[in-house]
Length: 141
Image 1 (spheres, rainbow, N blue to C red):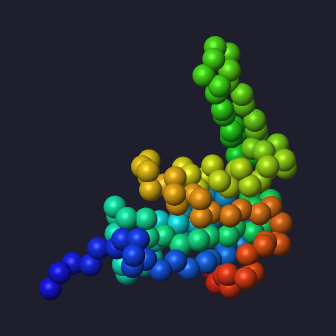
Image 2 (tube, rainbow, N blue to C red):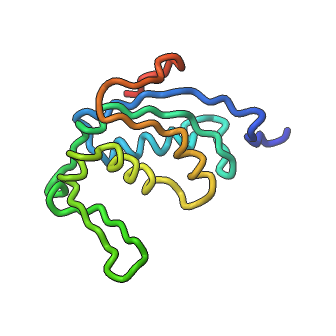
């Protein structure tokens, strides 16, 4: 008997909806990262991109526990001297909650080339409406 190895020809991708309203940002990111990688599938293969498409709704209503809204920073650097920019998560969650969710999910993914392709299948919306009804996504609890 041979071991099953997933590849592009035999991967079936589903669509899932994750509602982040009232849920901690990090716990939601763990669920989304596992769906993007395909870790819940029986046919999971670590070296193959066998994950599903994920839609995150209500990203603006995700919560950060403790004092993270005031103490946690989103940092970017341009590469130039003095090019560090810092934004508190309180401001980031008000202005760009989709970016906060994307950064959290990216942090849960491995650092390899499969991650880049997996993150293309992630669709994040600040509100409850999304434009992927035609794909008939399943709701993840």
